[in-house]
Length: 189
Ligand code: IMP
Image (cartoon, rainbow, N blue to C red):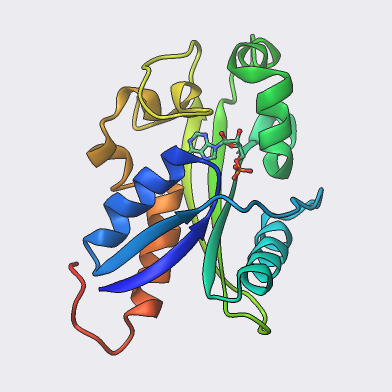
């Protein structure tokens, strides 16, 4: 099994990464050392900086995950500021901002940054189109899961199995796993 250190304080992200990567011959180990989160306007820059910083600090290869939800009617808000907005406004106030809005389209994006000490980060992106629900539904998952719906069901209403077969994180991790396993035949799908 290939082992990879995932630098994050988010236990939900770890659980999803273990679910997705273990089926592809990759073991995930959590490291909680943290890294400076740049206030940047692109997830890619935040993930690259974090991966490079953490790889150099730990002296080993690492992965990080930076994700964001982009609401079309709000000009892409909260996007790269999703963590700050979730902590300050939360789902109920986002639903309030969307009250009366008929364009409910949104995109969830995930950028996985992978880095070897002393090198530049490599990035793997995944995104999924969805809609902001009218009310929060379901208590599975974390963060924006109760208000982000794909095919009429929110991530909060989906089991791990369902979310992890179509999510932004799944799509980014799949590319990452394929790249890590390149030339090998030890992954499924
Ligand atoms: P970050 O990637 O930890 O910066 O996440 C940005 C914000 O989006 C945080 O508030 C997370 O809780 C939230 N978030 C990240 N990934 C997901 C997800 O898969 N579902 C719902 N919310 C998420």
